[in-house]
Image (cartoon, rainbow, N blue to C red):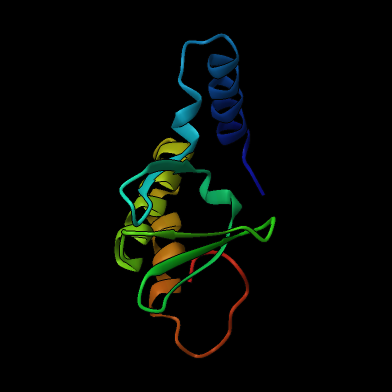
Length: 114
């Protein structure tokens, strides 16, 4: 459940984006396709990621994207994104939950970056 402070901060950011004061890229992470094309992805749209050997993202809409970044680099970018979005609130908890997926090899996959 979101507290009022977090909701207020998100509302302020949304208003700043709508007014053109804050870039909408704030809500994206920058990745690189295998042929060096740069793309931005909203991490909230990543359903899962794996390395076979290339890092492959599967988005919630079913699209697959192969990127140069390793899984660890991808996780670091997602953690940094979540910290930006949370505005520092619960940043350690967000990082711990996201990093848990990197070490989660018990086969329990509930979506998200793994």
